[in-house]
Length: 379
Ligand code: SF4
Ligand code: SF4
Image (cartoon, rainbow, N blue to C red; front, side, top):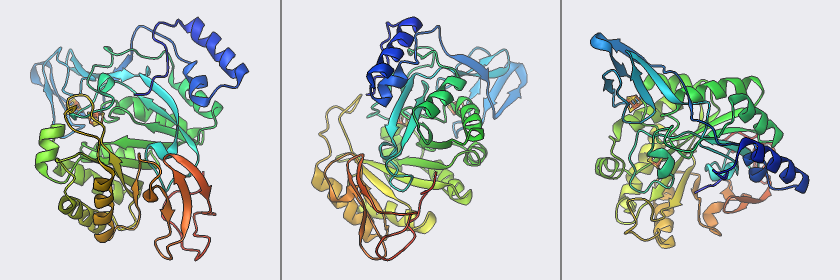
């Protein structure tokens, strides 16, 4: 769980800490955290993608739940409230988390290796994953969590000040704070910054299509390959996620996938084989896939961490199914931390977990055979 601010600090204390940290040459994350302060609560803005119904009811069409809300009701994702027949998103302009992170943490392996992104999050989520590592923020309303007194302009200025290549909307579920994300992304893009989204992609076609046109890349978490895992562990249907992945592909946005390997739930190599074949056929064999170790957290504390041999079996199954770039993301060292040219087998980028040790991909090409590696290689 990232901690970026002390909740008992006043704005003056934050700003004074900022000056001290800057003078001491403190780390990027600590420096940015000093922009933050306790404040009354998040802002609100009228939400997009909803219909007004008779009797001051509304229906939201952002995600496949299509919530119908009575006047005064707050939705399943906890961010949107019907106020007098209009829908307002309360996760706006006051993030609950900000952090400068290596791009590899998203995880992205084929996007500007060795650079940093400013991660942004607001409270709320339209899933109920039993192992959520950020449940204190994701399973709460935006105004139930401590928020940071940082405007959109300050978020963007902080991104530039810390020499991040762009922003990543992550940690909770960006679909829940879609309106806020789009407002920052639009402004960030005008200033030459990139936008990336880490999401479970439980979202309807039009919102994801519109969003895809504004961002540079997505990292989508696949929760398993059986409907049962999606329903029992995360509380949603699987099919709409696959539809959203196809839309991202149609919109030609960069896409990487991450799969948390949960012991006994989704670690069967046969299940991974089915998922990898679907990815190959629908998204392409060059779509990077990251296997991530599960850590017991929230309501799934009775399971162990994923054993490394189980991760190895998943990597083998995905490679055997024809995927050309398969990674292990949060175990280091591991041979699958590195990027290996799919054409000649040369190790092009060596990593230790999220740290890039050596990057020989000049302009995104293999230094040995000049094969063009898929991805985003220029800022
Ligand atoms: S985004 Fe929220 S309000 Fe809209 S349909 Fe999904 S859960 Fe309901
Ligand atoms: S989608 Fe992400 S943020 Fe939401 S509950 Fe699942 S793991 Fe947590």
